[in-house]
Each structure stands twice: as C-alpha cells, then as structure tokens.
Amino acid sequence: MRLFAVARCCQSVTGFQENAKAVYASPLVACGKCLAHAGTCKVPHVDLDVSGLPCVDNSRINIKRAFEEGGTGPLFAVWARRLRVYGIPMAILENDFKLGILSGLLGDLYNIYPLQVKTDDVGHSGASRNRLYIIVVSKQCEQLKDPVQLYNFVAERNRSVFSTQPKDYVFADEFEIQCEAFETARVRGMTFRSSEFSLAYLLNDREQKAVLKLDEMYMERFREDPRKNENLVYFLGDDPSWTASWSAVNHRIPTFRTNCGTGKYWLPAAQRWLTSSERLHG
DNA sequence: CGGATGTCTGTCGTGTTTAC
DNA sequence: GTAAACACGACAGACATCCG
Image (cartoon, rainbow, N blue to C red):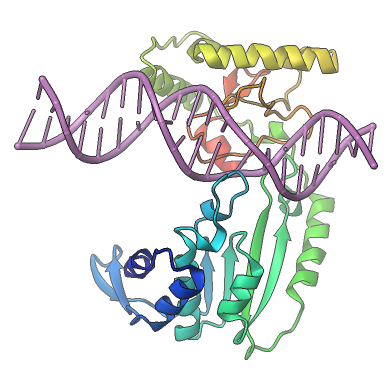
C-alpha cells in the first residue's frame, strides 16, 4: 500500500517523465501492511513478479485517456523501480502500456517481450477479450528460448486441441440460478417467483425491450428462432439500436466490461442470464 | 432531517479488426 | 477497398443506507 502512496503523491501536471524521476528519487518503502500476519512485514523477495496494473488510462473506450500521463501513470514507474531496486530477475505485466515508455523505464537492465495473447490460445474461443502480457527479463539471465516463439508454439498446439463455444460456459445448477434470481428480485424490488422457469419477468423495461429488439434482429438476419441457438448470448447493458452486443456474429460471449457489473448477459435458449460464476469462467 | 457515502443503472464514441 | 462488427470505461443520475 505504501508503494501506492508514492504513486499518488506524484500525480501532477509535470508529465510522466517528471513523475518517473520523482518516483526513482523517492526513498523506497521496504515494509508494508500484511494481512496474512496482521502487522507490518517486509516486502518479500521474489524471483518472478506477476502484476496487473490499472488499464483505465490506456483503454480505447476511455475518451479522455491520457496513457502514461493519466493518474495511474506513476504506478508503472513505482512497479518498474521495485524490479530495479530488488533485482527481480523476471516479471510479467498484464497491461497495454506503451512499450516505448516501458523501455525507457527498464530497457537498460531488462529485455522486454510483448506477448499478444488471444483467448483462443488457451482454448477459450467462445470468450472475448484478448490481452497483452509483457514479459520482462533481466539481461543477466541466460535466455534458453525466445518467449514469443515458445508462446506461439504452445498456443498453436492449444488451439488445435481445445476450442470452446459460448454454451460451454452455461453450466450453473438450478440452485445457483434461483439464488441469482432471488437477489435480482431483491435489488430491483420485485417479487421472486420460485416456480417460474423463465427469468424474463425480472428484466426491467429497458432490458425487455433490448431482448425484443435483438430477437427481431436475429430473426431478420438468420431466419431462425433465437431460442433454438444455445450459443446465443445478448449483452443487455448496451442499447441494441446503438450497438448490438451479442454472440450471433463472432460466436463469442461479448466482452465483460467494468461499467456494466450489473449488466446482464441474456441466454435466449435458457431464458436466463449468465450467473456470476459462469461469467468468471468466461 | 439532511449531508455523506455507497450502489445500481444507463448513456455515450471512435479507432481497429474482421468480413465481404 | 469498403462496410460492418467490435472493443471497451468515464460519467452522471437515481436511489439506498448510514450517521449525527
């Protein structure tokens, strides 16, 4: 937590380079609050650092995105400094951070390998959201393989063996489904109906309209009853007249987004939405 | 009561990728 | 080459809850 404090105090209009310089010049906090031991513990040495830093300043949909100049920018400098000071040999960073900036922070001591990771590479062809993992390895390490070549080799093999469809993520049992239905009824101030198979009664007006509109669009385009397609998923957090967020075209569950934590992923065939645990797997 | 804080919900845009 | 499909989070308003 103390590392974050350093990052926060450096947020200013002086630009990323100035912030990074300040971070690099700040005293390093070697101890932090430890929940495991309920006290203050020394930050342990690790051989491999796996970090996922905030992506909001690098996200395409953020109209005001400022990349490294955004509020989370200094955090990357804090992360980089820790690698340097502790001499951590290897790190994996999950974030679409500018490689040029990263190179400026670590390029003198580390080799940097960006890995474009597709969900298909691990068999999740039925899910969306590709990632960028940046592998950072100390130049003092002996390199046995090129990480990108190795990754591509494994990914190709995975793709040929595993391949999911949206329906593979639909596995919740009746108890879990009814628990979610009950909770939604509570939040929305509606009456829970334990005997009703379809959860459509729990959708609000806007969501019901979205389902109708998407049903219409599906019928029009595929000349088929949407309820017959077990791989069909509608995302109800968007207005379909604005953008159709569904699995009908790319055969993937639409991307899970942070704003729409409560946005439902509707399954026309099952007449319910994906439960939280199903979404975790997707 | 009413202010502070937290949760839920819905709207908004555009650069990149994919399909034809 | 062109058009359609897609990816993705800030923000604001409504509403709920807490606390003095």
